[in-house]
Image 1 (cartoon, rainbow over the protein chains, first blue to last red):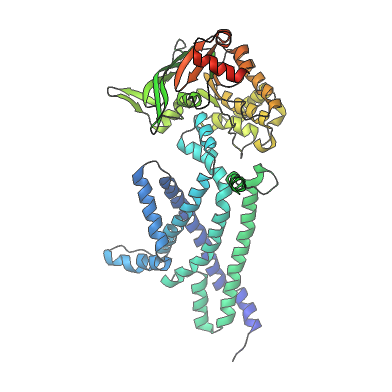
Image 2 (image 1 turned 90 degrees about the horizontal axis):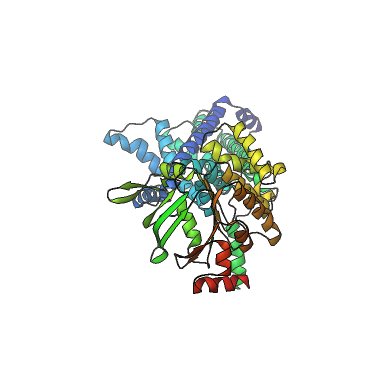
Length: 242
Length: 257
């Protein structure tokens, strides 16, 4: 039994090869989140459409993505699609697979955020002559953000770790690089613990960013933590019912 | 839109919510500079009619012209067809609306609320819009509140910012949907004072309200709506002293005693 090797742990903690892998994990997460936000917004708006066809398309997309394992989706995209002539690079496959998956989850988050904005806000935006997109951009989404950001942050935290699935189709992010380094140097525990520390550092850092974001969108509403008006109405109604 | 067009020309307006027949043939013409107060029991359709005037609600039959625009529709040989979103929005620019619940944008300051329309709809430069917003906030008596968020303002102050927001679009007509109904009694007059001042400046206004004092003081006409129809349309002095219909009398008995 070799035992825990502190010197090796400290050495790998600043290993450029692993750090590069961690950087891949970061940019991949950011890129996937960006793709997911765009897809999620489109799907959320389609879900809220007054027309049936876009509603059903969005519903199908969300159902499909949330109902199948991400790992299966990635393998189908990277390994399966070449069979029908669609050849994608590893990075393309991961961006498409994770992006589509993230978009489906974010669609529901964004939809809930938009639904939390009172109807009067839509009336008032229309009332000053705002067309649909202007209304969304200037009035609705900034208010929905207050409801969207907490679960969105949760998703991003999850995403930082979910990108490790990309190692399965050989993308050299943090986990894959850890495994490759282990095959060379056999320090299994030390290297995996270093990888875990990196993940922890990334999610911790994100936690700071998220708190700052929440404070930023909550600023107009005063220092007390905001409570959605509906929740308050709900509790009053429940009190009446008792 | 020629200046000779009436401000509002509603002909045979019908509106349904599912099977509920809310508006049952409303005809109303409002000349420019007129102040029309719309009264009626709750559920009579008066607020719905107001919301139809700027196409926040679609209508099923009839037509509504505001300053010459067929609001929300275009004429075709087969009747009226609803316009696309951007064109409806264009029609709404010159129709200001003030809501019972104020509906200020809570994430924007008072100034941000007033400049939102001019900047994002009319494309005015920010500093020009901000200067105009300071003038309008002074006009409604809130020159020091430009940087305050709605959550930091009283109901009466919020409603006055909402009026400034509507004025910022330089509307041809202002619609007020029970503007004082959500206010504490001591704040009602500060909002009414602003409305009185606007009417003196010749603003065309259609006001759904229960403030009979306001109606007596500034309205050119009082329109009494009941069960989706206009039942009376008279000068305030006439309506309040000699209502022509039994329903008008019954309504006045209820609200004046």
